[in-house]
Length: 272
Length: 348
Figure (cartoon, helix red, strand yellow):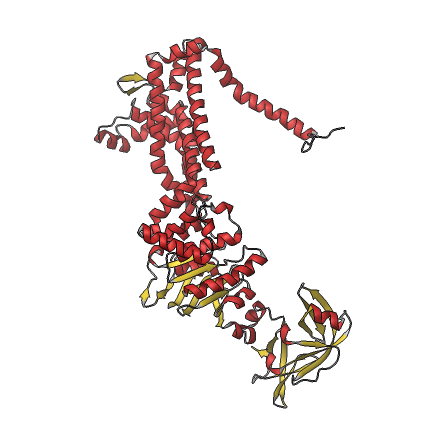
């Protein structure tokens, strides 16, 4: 009898776990797959050519990208500080960062209106420099950023933690200033985590509905008065599943394609 | 060359304090201490990487206590080498020169020279991840030395290496040091490494320096029981001075009487190194003033050498070669004689 080398017959536990795992994967993957294949490619293309759909796609992608870029600018320094320093109240700061994850997003939308509304501090500042918030691109960006930036900060923090602090110390003794040590050593070594966090943040921003529907049910963007994709899907659903299905499929496809491309870039970075 | 004056550093659980060191130009100085004694923090405080509470650090006639690390001209090599994993060996070595804006031609000449000295020219294009422990250590040394620091700090640089590589690197460190002639502060917990490399040694314990001296002084005149134990002096005994006899001080160690050359009186603690004791089946005719009979109570085989415990009482630990062990045919319970000089006994 020929025995296969390296093959080990799975035990009863492994078989049960494989079955349960497969069920879980089916649960995760079946709905988006079914949605995408419910519409023909022709229907999807024609839907994409509708003005309110392509303007919505552009608004959603650019707003999520802008939110991510601002998140990188403000979040990465904070992540570095949290990874490198011990200070009183650090746990409190870390808890604050994760607050947007735990509060209902429609409530987050209302909360943002409180501070960015025209009668409040940040709102007055934005108004002062001629930037509107309510029902604007800015409002969409801020809502996306609020709910998704914890993913970026947490990933960047873990990335910096994984960089041996002695590498930075050696760099300092070799003549690098703190800035140079950060940009030449810490950042290049943590970039994959930061990039993964950015992808997560961007994807999370892309799918935001609750906060945006409060702040910017529709927003002015490049001359259009349009909605972000999740709001557009909900709006179309008022006219039935046939109307919402193709838009939902486009939203899923865009998210998935971008997610796969960006994750593969991060994975390539991991291998090199 | 490098002077550390009354340095005080907060280590969280305890303070590193009253640290005073004067290290000569070209001196290979060892800081020896157990894990957690604050050795690494001391190095980092000297390099400006760890805040000091009080005290001063001087290089020559320049005080550097408040200078940032990049302005101190101090190189550091850590135990795990801390090579930049995203840069090639060449870029690792060139990093310091680049940071110091060294012209390209000059940088290339310096890199060529240091890799020649270290014998690592063939590794330049490699990634640090592909190097062996010894190669990594050489690259880390080259990276630190190429910037021509005034002082080189080595943080347990040989601890992560296998015994054979460690021994080879010890020899190479000695050679490199003799060629580059800069002051080195090397911290380690390994006493034998300290003796092999150091011109002078400082023992750090619980945040203070217990003793500074040459390796010989450490071996012969440990300042305290802690230092004696750290210096692998196996025989640390209590006794009482009985008086003077035949020009020697007679010390009662509870059963046996030892002859020592000390002026101490009353209750004393004393140490005797295992390698200073001769072991024989018959009493030895020699000038050594102590010749005592006991019974072999334990034999600990360490490969090339063997530790023999002889109980008088008290217990004396002796060290002999394998050849001597075979010749003497020692076994537990065998009666033997131990012989040692009066001057071999050190009273704290």
